[in-house]
Amino acid sequence: MKRTLSILLCTLPLAAQAAPFSGGNAAAGAKIHAEQCNACHAARFQDDGSKIYTRADRRAKNAASLAGWITTCNANLGNKLFPEEEANLGAFLNQKFYKFK
Image 1 (spheres, one colour):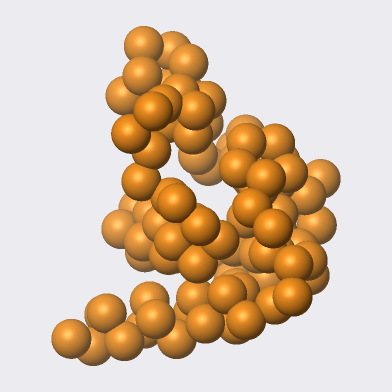
Image 2 (image 1 turned 135 degrees about the horizontal axis):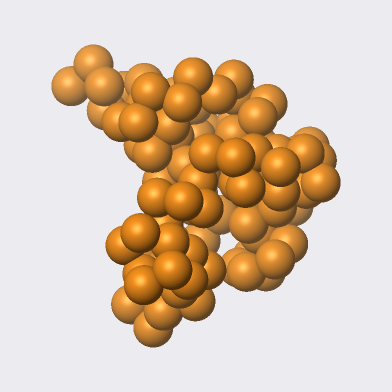
């Protein structure tokens, strides 16, 4: 329960923005993605980590859902990203793969 509440509280500010991840820096997010995300995703998708975002059954269906997945990965893997770094990562992923409005 406590963890669910933490995830919800972390994702609400991102979901409330007029444009998803508008406060994020996509270039900084790209660096975070390369350093902390891509290797894990590539291992799961035969060396093409981008498949996690482009597959037909992807789990992130909107900006709030994407923010939640970012927070979940961060917490589960112990990446210790700050909320602004999560927003940067969201800005990169949204710009490159999702195009949520």
